[in-house]
Length: 206
Image (tube, rainbow, N blue to C red; front, side, top):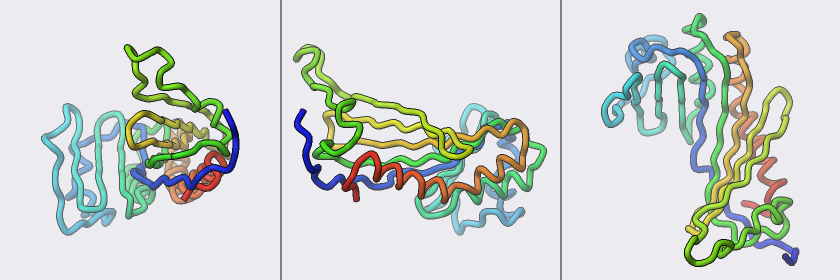
């Protein structure tokens, strides 16, 4: 492969969420309960397509909640979902928690990977296995240490019009609610770190 100056890399933030792994009670964590605790008071709430087998899903125009017996997921592109999750943990301090994940997914189309340190790893020939087995997607995954967080980076490229770069900032909580609250409140800091890592992986991204 010939290396040179890469063209502009266009990737936009497509999804961001915080995942609190723990044993939550979906019968307690309702929109009404969140409003009573003054955690989340939207003008309107819409429930998901039916209740989950062991959980519940609801959303406002800007925030989505998913609660089941394995964890709590709060996602939003506009609001600080880490702060919402931290307030839930403060209101339910005895919930058994094992880990917190702050997640950020960027999507777009990268026309050139030449200046990326991942270029040799992502340079997979779509015809590697011949026309009878065309490549649909290739995935590169790496795990790094960033302070107290373990950061999993996954880059997926394919033959469609959209590639993705996913960052998971994982911190163990080990049933320590205070540790989990602190991790959730590092959401904005982790997003800034993901942007810094993106700039290192793909010089010229915008």
